[in-house]
Amino acid sequence: MGEFEVFEKFKEQVVVIDKDYKIVYANESYVKENGYRSKEEVVGKPCYLVSHKRDEPCDGECHPCPLKEIQKRKGAVSVVHTHYTHDNKEVHVEICAFPIEEGRKIIQFIKNIKNDKEKFYLFSLSQKLSSVGYLALGVAHQLNTPLATISLALEELEKKCGSCEEIEVIKNALISCKNTVDKLLLFARKDNNKDLVDTKKAVEDVLELLRVYAKERGVIIEKELESVYMFGNETDIRHVVLNLVLNAIQASDRGKKVRVFLKKEGEELILIVEDEGKGIPPEEVDKIFLPFYHGKDKREGSGLGLAIVNDIVKSYGGKINLRSAPGKGSIFEVHLPLS
Image (cartoon, rainbow, N blue to C red; front, side):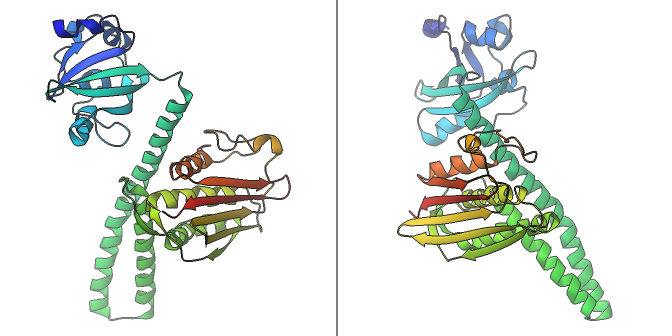
């Protein structure tokens, strides 16, 4: 199309999409970077089919559709996607999209971010958090059905046989399972809305979820929690607590203790997680918040736990202090503004 010829010499990929997701223009860079031989192979086709090999428009936190986001926000957007070339090679890209022709079309400028470590990490991090949420959601829903079946069967059994001590034991166990499922579902929330959060309850719920794991490891969890409310997202708070305490448990030998403190100081929430583990060597202290960093001795986890904590804390304008030495354990102290 003549009006877009100016983009032919651009090194960045440029593509124009109409409101029906059809590609109406693509420059040479877009065609070549996606592994096609000519524009005829992509123009007229749905963008989600060409770049994502999907049968429907993109959605979800990991791949928000630029067209939908523009319609929602009434302005330009920037998103990071994983694209798939014609021969199914995976490419991570940043997309800057703008509405044109009074919103009837959008134009996208697409840049490969393989050499941009920060953007690539943030994209990996968002996928990790999203995966945790989807896993929690799937497990919770899978458990809900058999729990409901057991509950109904138990009611029928009680009608036939009357109440007894054994039935009460099963009832209490069902309530405990249901409470665990409800706590697990809180990790699957996808909204970014902020509200008044009962942080003491959030910490207690996470510790309850980790109780069995700690017991299997022979680690004792102690807590000293004040009632503190803050303005934020409850899922964020739970992720911070989960990753810090999980890290502390994994660093501890059998018989050792992990202590969790929650308090308010001035206009800040203070969360402290202490362990009696081997401690962190001085040369590793500056590296532990890097994504995928495991340390010399650590063999468990994805290497993203502390990076996730650091990212969330920074997004709130907070900070993390670490005190650690070999043989003396570690103390992570998180400071978050209450509002």
